[in-house]
Length: 439
Image 1 (spheres, one colour):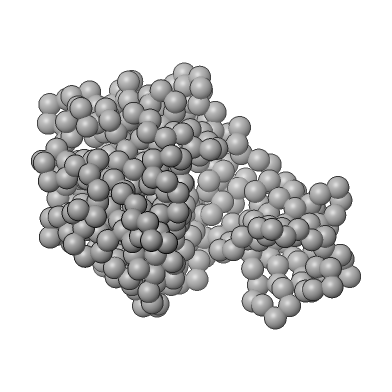
Image 2: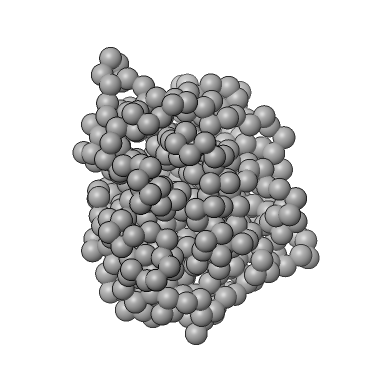
């Protein structure tokens, strides 16, 4: 039974999402699939079941699953210092102190590492190697990950930490990461529509969705490239994501032919660290997946430029779903879909839509449009952009601020925020807060 179709088709129109695809899991099997919309706004080609989307951060638990297969084979240890096995690069000292970091900590985002996420690269831009990403050297567009918290003490989301896992798996096996993932996860689970190859090879590019921003405009170049493969590089379909979720559930249950031993699968789905705030309705990290407090619900959300997606499975009943969209506005659709799934499947403590704030009304955004200045420092102009704002500071190119709520906006790629407070617009950066004076 497809419990998601009616809500998704309505929300796609309401939220301006060009294309969406989904799969429903019941009793450990894919029971329904669906698609709606187009590959690219303004063009006729429709999303089909074989359309591939960027899975973004859902790449992380898939990489962790491969890592656990190597642990099962005795090639890796979850709790040894990764520097003892890394040969191409080493976790560097932090101001003279050499931290010990483990795979368990890296996969659960409790290693205290920096570099939370990656913006990707325009398809015409030069791409860095994994080593250049880890060292933060050109053409990498992010700083290399470093340990800035005591490992094991708290949650700190780190795509950089997942990139360390990627390098370690290559160092230990001598196999390029896309080939290793195909061997360890994609082929054994029947994920034939999936690849970690970046950029997309021709056989996949023809069936790939184009990314869109929150206003519905295609991403410049169609889609960004993510050489940070383990953290953000998977291209896939909802049906293949569902197969991955079923593979974890079968390993947990000790089913015949499961890819990971029950012992390690249960460690994978046991909370390691609590997140400060829920992400997509889940509150803890296991070894790769997001979890609820009991570990019964597992999954992950993902967001690359122009793409939003989500996967969630009940390890006990084998019920769940995967939703993938080609829009930055797709996170709202996905959370609404999973709220429906939670209600249908009796997930009483799963309420993802509670964290889904209202977006500003179009009239409110139009009222904010105009020219401002920050004290006597900088002038800037504001115009409505999708459900957010496009802000142009004097002497700077335009910067887009996404709506976090009806009154709060955050800039893409910087730490700047704008808040509508008591009728006035307030500019915020770490250690700075200034009223915006309308001119």
